[in-house]
Image (cartoon, rainbow, N blue to C red):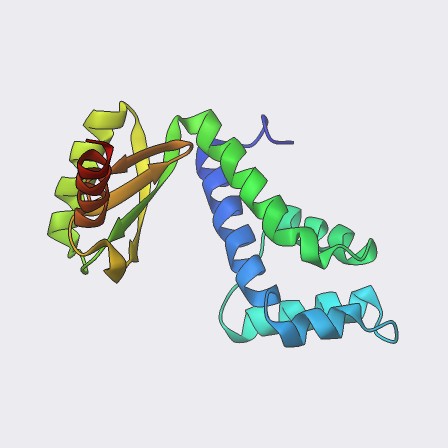
Length: 167
């Protein structure tokens, strides 16, 4: 199924899976889905109803996946399924997810410049998402897969401390 799916379709499916995870990740929905008195079809109808009330609709493939997950009582595994699918989409398109941790908010213009510099540094397209982490004091910390680029003030202070205590 994955290889036959076009690139734009894979991206749309990935986005729909992420939305589905967001809809089903609440404790109320998990408790409802885990209730033995509620049939998987009822849970599916409830999730579909919530999605429709928010103006969302899901591809047949995503709906079938959701039915299968619910039929097998594996709603808790849905976030990992979505993450693994996103990993496959990224691998097939040559894009990597990047988490940019910053002590301060980064506006869109700055983010574009930062992402362009990071893409040059890492040698691939990046799908960046920003997290505000005040304990960094300043600078940024970037995580791309298993690679970390830490230019934060906190990291520099730790390097200085290690150098001073080693002498």
